[in-house]
Image (cartoon, rainbow, N blue to C red; front, side):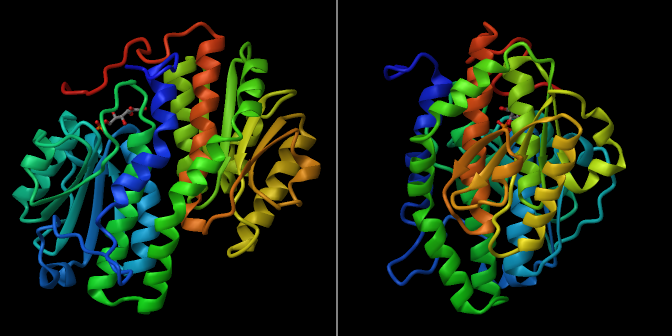
Length: 369
Ligand code: F6R
């Protein structure tokens, strides 16, 4: 059932291009616009929405953090993202015009379920993004957009995460389409970009051997740091989470702009720092700032591992190790940049003799509080 792979996690990483394509299937119509019939919240209701709040846990929370960029960009509606375990015990300001999005692979996570109940009590509509048909979270929501990742067996979430990102972009673009916030052309172009992204995920998977080799050389390290900016920041958080849960190493993700406000004190000789480098096109100011961050940490002895777009030459002089990812639009970069981090964590876990599919102390779905 592992399909020739040593671990379910490896199989599920390899299934990502298909999972991404399946999640798009039937949702883009031939004219190039979106039809999300399952989202049973009517267009007039969606036009009334004045606030979006995303609640989730763990990896699904990271998908939510990335979704915020796309939702605010394409809809101009303010979007907050909160850990379900925090949200449920707050007194959040919500009403009938708030749209709450609950993201969950299993559909059974207790904190996320409690958060959505909390939102519905206040009259908000809840849209679930979920991978498990008929599970509790979609059953208790007003609407559901299913991800089509197929069953995810490994405890560490991989393909579910990528499909959560796809579903979040679909929601952002659909809201933009329904509300007419952006020029139709921009939405249509973004839908087209999204429809091609599974090929890029496929391409990145073909180049993972050097990432594995690199991971093996780091098996005796105690700490790995991850840096990112903009949508690369949640990718850094996700890279760190994967490493903690699988390799049992201390790993932390930082917003690169926060380095000088504290974390740079952690940089010492030979500490590995993975940097998610934004595209030099588009928001080039972010790219330039990250390049100077890489220079700064390298000057202090860090071993720099850059995840950078093909053709980005500016990082070359400062990267001790360079992991290339295909050129994508900025908002879609997390779909390709996360893949090497999954492979990296999986390989480090193996090198350290850990059980990849069943990390210690963790359960696939957390139905307790
Ligand atoms: C990390 C991981 C967990 C889950 C979290 C939420 O690899 O798998 O952090 O993402 O427990 O689970 P779901 O999405 O089922 O609500």
